[in-house]
Image 1 (tube, rainbow over the protein chains, first blue to last red):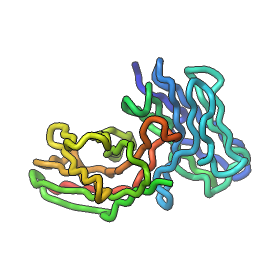
Image 2: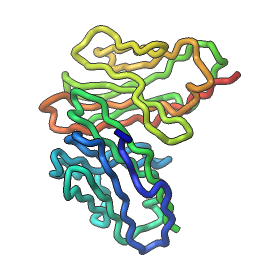
Image 3: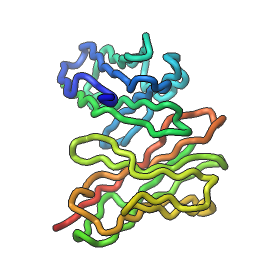
Length: 114
Length: 117
């Protein structure tokens, strides 16, 4: 398996624009996580899914953020409208069972909002 | 809520030396998991080692070992015979055990480890 695949690797957008980040988890993994990494706040869990169902979205910062998982092989994180403070690296990770196996991370998407 | 604290923002050692990275955490849970992740300049998050709280034996993975002190809520990482490729950010992370109600990782702020030639 190619691992967790995120796209794009880098995204630069203007304030106010809609941004969509994409993630393809490892095939067969039931759990999918979205994390955000910033210098100020470090790595934070935004939301996670189990079998395509959102389980905990308490980490989603604002209503401007939304995440979907329409099927087992694809998830999106959308920011609308984007703001400069959303600039960060966004990671997607997947696992079979987080209490029994390793979470595998994608390469991350570096988002810059200007 | 759980918190993870890494008190060393940056450390620098000579190649082949042994280095210990500190991590403390706060939780009221009894069943949980602890992890160390490595993030090299490539940005990839790589699992280094994992410890189940119910296991008294400290986890080891080749040159990497932990000192898990449950009562003190301490989870330090020891890297023996350090190599240039060990240069990276190291993150300590916590996850609640089964039935704990949360399956994601809570991370510390990280320690930037530099291995000098």
